[in-house]
Length: 243
Image (tube, rainbow, N blue to C red; front, side, top):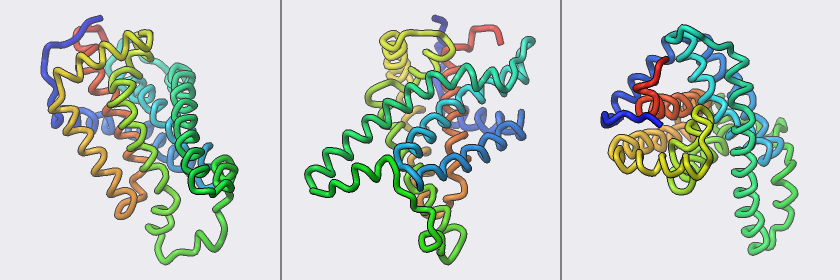
């Protein structure tokens, strides 16, 4: 598996990710709008919302690949190629995150005696006039997307401590087995800790902002993180590969 010896820089990763927005703004922002609509599921079923949020995050990596190939490759792929390519692995990852979240919630509910929360994890309709009646649109979207930002932070923590930051794109684009992908990811992260820690700090900071000050940007943050995942992967593992 080819890798680049060039050290990653956070500023370069962020700049290249923003460049992706300019390449295909309709596709990039169109997917953001789709994510924004799907994330509303969390106010009907937390389990469904978490599943949808994680799936959208990882499918977004495929969308970034599509934008890249559509612009730079002699053999561009279609939009639905990105969906079909990304969705199976995204669903698998989302199922694992939902299962982990359910275990944590189950233990907490059993300890606290709040057994009703077990059922509410799977279905709890919160889209009522009372909940939606807030003073500003910002407060409404902050309420709607609050769980999504917590989910994003949780997923990133799982990636960096358990799965490996580069594991998903390596399995998706290099057909690597999970153990091989994690080993490759751990080695690469060790060589680029400064850039990756700055990137994660930036994302965590933005996620916190999106919970209160800029909730409408939550779908944009999801697509930006997907693009950062792809750009950082490409910078290391596809530098010497043909487009």
